[in-house]
Image (cartoon, rainbow, N blue to C red):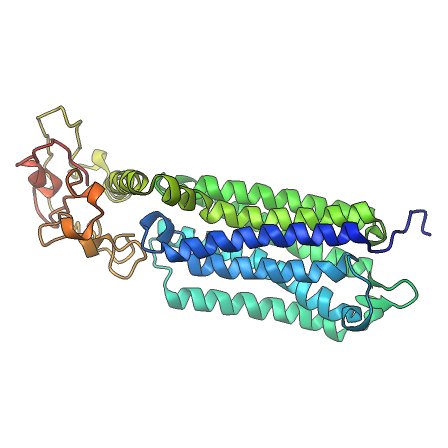
Length: 384
């Protein structure tokens, strides 16, 4: 038939579904562990709520793939092709892609635009994602099945028209091509967050998935009738979706398990070190006559400061509401600082209590950060 070897669903399809379910279960356990350790700062910085919603969309997308890719006999409830293909496979695949893109936009808004991505921002972004995808799927639902997707009783399969395939793939390619602009803007994010490298890896995974989907849907129109091709398609979709979630939270979860205190200390120190470099690079131009303070190695006992002049420095301190340390931000490092800008030892893990000093800059002060170095701590370490 159609020049291919038709194979009905059998035990190999059940094995493929079971393997996929097992991988989704592993990812679910990773998310549960992350939520149980939400107070761990490297995990809390990953926006677990948004990541969890992305994961839920991947599970529902996989559920739609089971009948859409022909892993079960399409009889009874499974024969409702528009429900499974349009509202599970297409809709939640698009939601997955859209929410991942919104997460990249959130990084651009916080780190490049210097604007907060608040709970309201998340709700608005989520509503826009849902509405746009509902409208797209609703249009396809209302159009005649002969133009979109319809059930073929004689073969017990759902026939997806070439027009719907091309429309869905084009929509995805347009979305992810536009993400390239965001990646260019994310290239200078501080190394403490690793968000740029993470975003590039996710982008590579999605582009590879889009290439595979385009070739499979356009070159092998009746792939669902061939056992090895339908299993391959489902496995690739599952692996790509879970890999994206692992790239979001996998590394901090592993560090929380195996190097909890050491990694958090290292992460905080690097974050604190990145912050002044980032702030001064963005807000102060040394060649313009404005002043700045330069940190030296701990072994260097000489601290140099330059005349600041008249300059409003209010946007450089932790009081900046867009800064990751600001009150209300998921990192909210201010909660463990005392009135002098140092960590409250009782609020820190034991491994951080004796060797980490954070000095907040003195806003609108001619001495700026140099004043905080007048009396060096006993261990000679200075971290902004």
